Length: 133
Image (cartoon, rainbow, N blue to C red; front, side):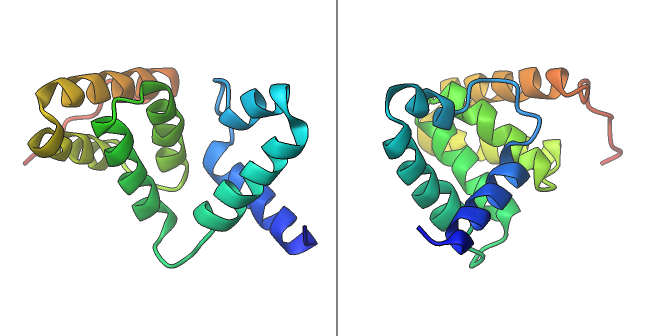
């Protein structure tokens, strides 16, 4: 493991997951196997999430859409927080979740919007300010 990968992993984890109050997957993994947790984190966060071929905001919106359709609410909450941390706007996140209805059905949209609302409430960002359209 190079210092570069280690520092890139730490930097990306901080960018995405700062101020997240829920249990992070890394913490769960580490409680069972510290070495494997480190390896998984280095790959997922240090190599995949840290890639700069697409902007972090785009990467998080893609992640939100996948997690919404797959109905992975806990992970969705984590990545909604990450998306907000990298500059995504709540209405952009909501639009991505609405888009998922075409492929995953409206029940996944409803669940995704509930997770978004809950996350925004926890961050003091709910209710949303209305915009003139």
